[in-house]
Length: 426
Image (cartoon, rainbow, N blue to C red; front, side, top):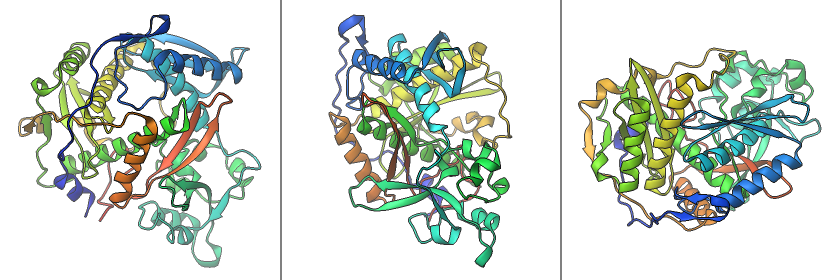
């Protein structure tokens, strides 16, 4: 089935009854447990904050938090004030949750941007060798083969070993540049130290940090990394189905009135903060993992947020909260420097607005969810493996107190944030 075909045939699948606690519980130190975590978090918010504070202190990193009025930003630095590489994160939700999220994300991005350490075990494999693994059919193999030459002169690409999350014992060599975009930007001499002499010029833009996450535990981090991979895949397919087909299928818009009361409040708040009506698009694919895109545009500029989770309610909350976060950043509270290389064009930058009139209205359907991260991980792994996409994972860094940064790779899922340039799945 093609990528476009997957979008056309995807849609909300029958889901279990909701398991949700809507009460506002208050924990220690005044933290309000107002945002349901749907069983994806290992600890209450106060404990999560204590753990990240401890991890940063142990690493000798100093956080600086800034209120963006709709989100919080964290910048990490050394004790002498020197900024650390990629140590910037943004958090969303109420202010306590947003601060904790920003702290975790800043540390995650710092670890995710780290280049392979000298002495780290790296495999050097050609595109032909990779074609004999679960990477067979991946669209990156063709340009990789062209970049590396052919036959006896074929150059090899540096790969890290990922382990299957289904406990099958399988491993997968994953090219470093696919999961660590900074690897493409580092000086060639740094790559040559690893024996990697590949010409990466044709592969610029192929790397993505998607599928990287941090958590108070390994299981928690893996759950969020897989959710991000599912979210990115669904959005790429949404773009393909909407902008790359002659007769695009109608968007599936969730009726706001069908949302639970607490999500209706968040939906209205998002519209108020963005200054425009929000379109909540159900982009759940055949994987059956609830995935949503919250889209709004004002003065010709589109802004969006995305979310995926076994909990449909949590997925919607993520999408709406991310929309609010994106709007806060756009208002000028955070002005990052321009990218050092052109980004691939995003078809959705033109906005979904022309397609909203023909959209199909649908009711929100709640789902049941596991009670703890371990069960979430098992169900996500089973859902992906059952559709032919065995997920693989790798721990990037573990703090002494258990805070863990991971990377996942799911063969067959779309990775390009701008959507597939052409159908790549059959």
